Image (cartoon, rainbow, N blue to C red; front, side):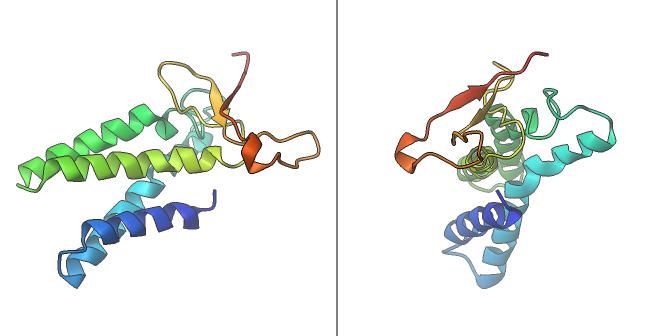
Length: 151
């Protein structure tokens, strides 16, 4: 999914979370959640490090997983608690925003799929099923399907 979609998620969550705050705080929260929404794409650095795309830590691998999102949420929650902020809301929203990245990417047919359930499995998933011509089935036919790789 284009980065614009990820940023839109961050902006929406930040705006909702900062609704009762002043304008400056809302903008800070929108920027914060937008950065978190883009965070899983830091795994593109794996290309420069020679990590193969299909490897667990390759692009759209472990960093796009629900586990990684939960870890980021945990770190955000700890920082929020240390700053005497409502840690549960910050942790939950951070985890949701980061997890949304993998789910949005799984709605595309690009790459090798998303390792949503890493470390439990290294299978990569799509929410769309493309045929050999590159066209998609109807929305009614969308399904979570593993992409199997031999590695």
